Image (cartoon, rainbow, N blue to C red; front, side, top):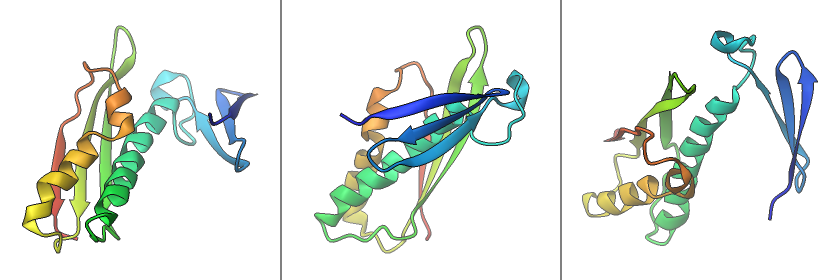
Length: 135
């Protein structure tokens, strides 16, 4: 179990401390929802979690095949839905090293699509994913 402590700091700002490491991140409400948009919104962190989970899962599992994903990138665009306000879509573009052999690509893509964060999100959330091997 990992413990975190979130503290409201006023003006829709929060700080979250990851207690095992004592590292911290901050959030702010977005401008379109009564905030200043000065840092990540809580829903932005869902996109960040998805991106980093995909990269981490691909790296862990790709190492078993001696594949190096150094420099891989994930671009995420988040669109909000209304009534109720929620994330409607996370559009994802993964840019991966071009030297990944063709025979390994479907396996790597499956790792990304089945990372723990992806498997934890609501099935109604639209998550179009594009893989580009050009890094």
